[in-house]
Structures are given as C-alpha cells and as structure tokens.
Length: 320
Image (cartoon, rainbow, N blue to C red; front, side, top):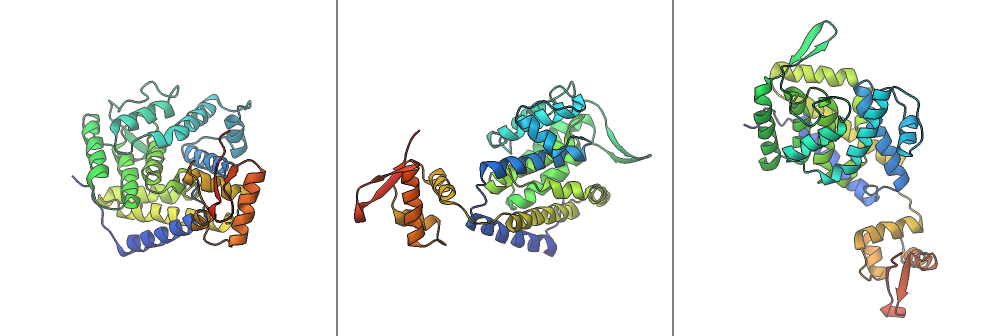
C-alpha cells in the first residue's frame, strides 16, 4: 500500500522553489563542490545527524577524526563518528530501493554500538519523551513486511523523489525497524534517495537545519502520527532542504579559478579531446578570451595538453 499523505499547495510551491534553486546550483557549478567544501559539508552533516541523537563531538573533533588525528572524548561518540564517516564515504554505492543495502548501511553505521547491527529488531519498542510514551512502533513481526512495502513504494511510485525521500524518512521513523540507529538511518537514506537524482545532496548538510529545529522536528513527527499522514512532515523537510539550498547559494561564490574550471570540465568530459567551443558550452558566462586564458593555464600547469594549431586546436587531459 502507498503510505498516506496529501500533495498540498505548500508542497507544490516548495517543490518549485527547490527545483529552481537546484537549477541555480548547477549553473554556478556548486553541485560538484571543491574537495575542501565537500569535506566541510560532510563534517556538518555527520555532526548534525549525530547531535540529534545526543553525540557531543564538535566539528573540529570530527574533522580531526577524518584526518586520522587523536581525539579525546566519550568512546561511544567517537565510534559513532568513525562509523558515520565510513557510511557516508560508501553512500553512492548503496541502492536506495534495496533492503539489503539498507541493512548493510545500518550494520556499518552501528558496528560496535549494538549487538544487532544490520538486523531488523525482534522485540517490541516504544519511544519515551519525558514521562510520556511518544510512539509505539508496529510489532516486530511486521517490520520486514512494512519495510519491503516501503522499498516497493520507492521503486514503483511516480511521485517526485523529493517527496518520496521525505515519505521514506517519516515512515522509517514510524516503523522503527532497528533497536537503535533509526533516526540517523532515516536521514541517511533520504540523502541517498536524493543524491541519485540530484548530486548536490551528497554534500548538502540540510540536517543542520533539522538539528537547529529539533523540537519542531519531533513535534511534527508526533502530529503526523496522530493524523496517520506524513503531509506535515513532508512540508517540514522540504522547507529545510529549500533553506539549505538557499544558504549554499548565498555563502558559496560562483567564481572559480582557471584551475577549478579546468578540473570541473575534465570531471565531466573525461579523456576525450575537446575544443575551446566545447569548453564554452559548459562555462557559458565566461568570455572567449577567458576560456583561452583558462586553457593556456591548463597547458602551462600540465593539467591538459594542446593538440594541433589555430582552428584545428584541441585539448585533452594529461594522465598522471
């Protein structure tokens, strides 16, 4: 069965706004960020998702772990970060519609933290907030079937991936398929679903906005549980994504150095010889003179080599 939710006018407006901003991101070549920006955003993503679950390590400490430096902190928190780093590095290798991939990711994410990592729960669970029971999950005997239905929905439903990723996020939290790690897996899998269509999401830390609005995050989950629809949650997460994209566009200058443009072009074009005209088809906002200077710079720095002369001039990547 298809999970219950409505497509509201707010959702349609958010989808339009997000699509427009993704177009701007592509035009500014921000969907293939520099290694430094990738690293910084990955740190923000890991910290935000784990901080929601109570992890105390700072961005500086997480960066140090990525750089194989010694960090002093709670052992559990360090293990959580090390596991998350491994999972996010492997993220593009997982298949969003595969239960096998889902379980493999959980096994790596929770390795050394719980004895049942990579396994659906076999016990009844409830979520307690303060002195109240906030949520009673479906019986353990139903988990495998509910998750399979959810993966089938991901695979077969025709709604946009932006919506389906939000629905999966909510439903995975509702089903609570594991004894622990459900929140971080739901957020991880939403990122995976999105990056398969929009590469920018591999390094877009929209989890930071969720973390900053953690009380609202749990409140909207509770609201959706009561009405048995994920509509409000879809709106909440789409707003977070829209704001994260807006921040990316505001904070990251679209200006690129000649070396940045050459590296970006080669990442798309590969080893096939290309002309200045081909180069300008990618960088439509630069002049012919700037393109010529870029290509000259690339030759001088041994990034590319020049083939032919005058009108027959071509360039190609230099293998190192």
